[in-house]
Length: 431
Image 1 (cartoon, rainbow, N blue to C red):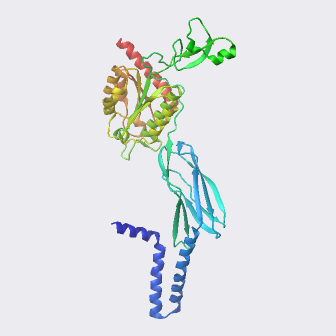
Image 2: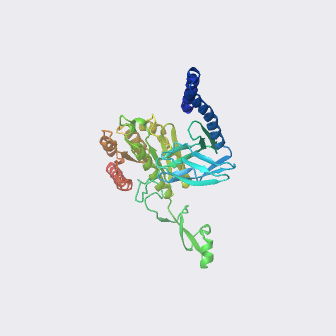
Image 3: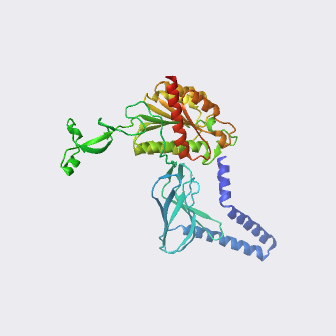
């Protein structure tokens, strides 16, 4: 089998040469059988052309050097991967019809160009490829291919080394997003001044009798020549968990695969929602974590800062709805991680309500859950999440629905506010 594969590849690469060899043998047989001059001359031309074309293709790569440089290997969806390609001829022979290419699985990656070089000439150019889809993509080694004028022989020389490019999902700005606050000192949608010492020093004021000396802000004191102390505000310190449903059955609602296709799919909507919520929370100095089960368990414990946001984006960039663990199983097994003062945001297109009970148990332990339902019917799945929405409302869990084509900023701002109100109303009713 391996020998057959090698022979097939050789035949495809040198098909024209093999055809010429067949013609050469036929011409020689005809010339020897008939003594006619035309087959002899045809055989002489073929015998002369084959080595000359081989030599041409070989010499075209002699003295060629190339390199490729890229500014970064981390990009956001919609940005352009800019690479600088340089090829120079170090020999004293001109090089004609050199094909420069960089093989890659990045959609829309086009760097191929045919160039010619004079002796000792160097050519450089920039190539930009728009990264339209999130994911991890491989960039191969830069290849320079030469050939002869008749296309009989092709030789390739590689330069550099392969590298990977990670394309992050593009978040949506959620300026009006308000999640249900956990019952924690300092938690809420608004920051308020406090006499406690927290990590948020927002202003200064004049020293008052009884203020601790460790609160004195010495640079302001030196500037104003009066004792000035730091003014703090309450710190929203509760953890926010983003739980993303990546079960294959929940997303694969159509016979051809995932509900919708490309960027218009339930999988991409879930990833965009997770990235947008994480972006909003991290910019607000909130402690946010990510939980999902695709091919493996993706678990990022809650932390603050830009580094945490980057870690979440790296995980979301390679997330695929290929898991075999349902949302209910995930919540049952990992729900112990949600503390009494945690807020849990569930993103799912699932139309099964078995996970609602799991979320209700988590809520009874003190966590504050809210669910964002990605309506699969609007993606052509043929079934809706009305029963799940009703079960969540009956359980007092805030629920919102995001449909295909919705403005995510407006949808989340209004729907999660409504979900918070529903949760609060249910709590008052139970009391």
